[in-house]
Amino acid sequence: MFELRDRDGLGRLGRFTTSHGTVETPALLPVINPNQVIIPPKEMRAKFGAQIVITNAYIVHRAMRERALADGVHAILDFDGPVMTDSGAFQQHVYGGVEVSNEEIVAFQRDIRADVGTSLDRFSEPDHGPGRAWADIEETLARTRTAAELKGDMLLAGTVQGSLFVDLRRRCAEELSKIDVAVHAIGGVVPLMEAYRFRDLVRVIVAAKQGLRPDRPVHLFGAGHPIVFGLAALLGCDLFDSASYHKYARDGRLLFPDGTRHVEDLRQVPCECPTCSAASLGDLQKDERVRAEHNLYVSFAELRRVRQAIAEGQLWELVERRCRSHPHLLEALRELRHHNAYLERFEPLSRRGGFYFTGPETQHRPILHRYRERLQERYSTPKRYVLLLPEGPRPYASTQRDLLAAVLAKRDVHVLVKSVWGPVPIEFDEMYPIGQSLVPDVLDAESLEALEVFAQRFLRGAGYERGVLWRGEASLEDLPETGPGDFDVVHARLHAVADFQFGRGAANALFSGKVETVRSKRTGKVRTVIREGEHVLSVRAEDGMYTLKAAGAKLLHAAFSPPTLRVVVETETAEFNRQGRNAMAKFVVDADPELRPFDEVLVVDQSDALVAVGRALLNREEMLAFRRGVAVQVREGLP
Ligand code: GUN
Ligand code: ZN
Image (tube, rainbow, N blue to C red; front, side, top):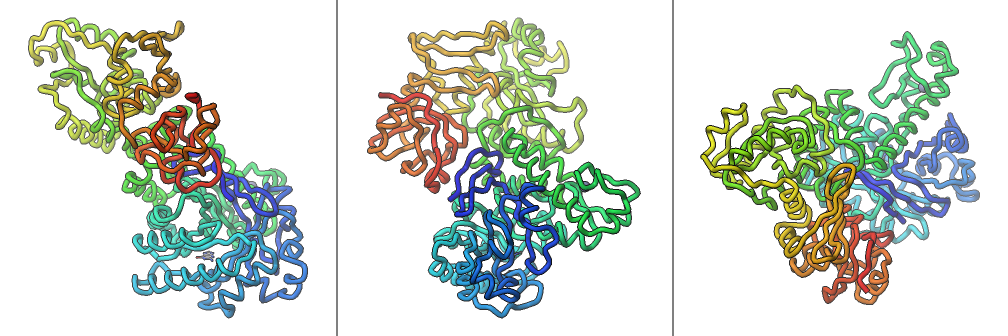
């Protein structure tokens, strides 16, 4: 069973439950070769923090079959935590064949009481053509179905194959989603990682993820180099397994989150892990075990960094940093923008902390893709003429207060900033990620060109009659003699954010009639909005977006017809939500496909009666898939 606790990008902090305990994900499963145990599993747990290990059932079957059947795999490994077993498909890649059948090896894994076992998939090589790849997929799927019949109580991992063919990967994933497996694995990617083909790796993972149901953990087979943990986690991989710590150690190589170093090339001990802190350069050069320990420390430390980054909403930042450590990783980072339509569906509404520009790649992050899309779809320009300001310090309306006042004294215009993120109507200056972002004063040519493209694309359809670039006082002469303007940025902000967050028309619904605002004494910013004496919403200081109250929810419910903003729960369970209890995913029958994680939502029953208002933790496809966990954190029930 898999439950989601927090998220960033497609990355997830989850809990994966097995009969030998619960595993926090993302998790790294060190590979234990029972024939040559360099570091025993117990030590893996005590010293490095491994919660689960993986071993190869094929090797166990060949080397110690009878003992494993009698005593179980946990006894073989001397480990009482969760154990996953692999099937031998990888040996097929390395040696060209294995001499067990799928039925045999699945039954064996079950009988040695593996917590998670793997069916015998057919490894598709990156150079296989589509015909062969599809034949291997069909065989892999047939074997997975058979394995599902044989698995007993064992959790089963079913593997996505399909070489580099994204359509085949997706179809394989869709078919696997229909089979009773607990874990989805992505296979056939070791040759890609070994050759640093990270761009292909991104394509393969995204294609697989698109076909997989979102409620099962995804294992990336053979991902053992910490350099990919962040990227793979960002794309929604939850489990990694690694023989790399041992293989690299054997070859005299040390793993680091930004690459690999050979001990022969070292003049210093370039690491602060406990082993390196106590070791000399000579120890590292002579002793395989010392190197293996280093490799494990570094791998688990990176995994913890990934988890921390998810928890603090900084996973993209971590990945952007890591992807600068190798040209082929940079290619992978630049590949991500081509998948924005998919990535955006899972991208949280906002995250904690700052939003840093780290290069032109940042401009294409899904959150900004969404910003520019919503600007086109949900924003209406308030004036006929517009003054375009260059990028500058934030929040724009505060830093440009004097300029704004001087302009409005003479002209009735709107003001828009040509930001590196895209055009920003000045009233969006406090909204995430615009208001929370930090941008260098001097930009590179690629970012400037993109900025221009974003601005032109919007301005073409925005409906302004004329736009003038601010170059100083004289620019006003290029605008028609309108007389003074009445543009009120506080009022405009209230309206623009409402439409942006909930859809066009939300502002009219929420703010018609007598509206009062309560402002923060310290910052002067609007904190709450009262309409006709009722508290309709609060403005969050962190992201400039709205938290809905019951009165606000009622207004939006009346203004928008289903499915907009709705999460529909089984009518029989709606009473709980009316009392203020969270809406559990298993009771959700439908939801607005436009909802994104952390959106404010209307919880309704099957006759569209409003029962609660709260914050969604999942998007529609996740709500419909997950049988565990909370779909909507209810803030207020409507009795
Ligand atoms: N280990 C590394 N790659 C693979 C794969 O494609 N399938 C399986 N079962 N194990 C692997
Ligand atoms: Zn070290």
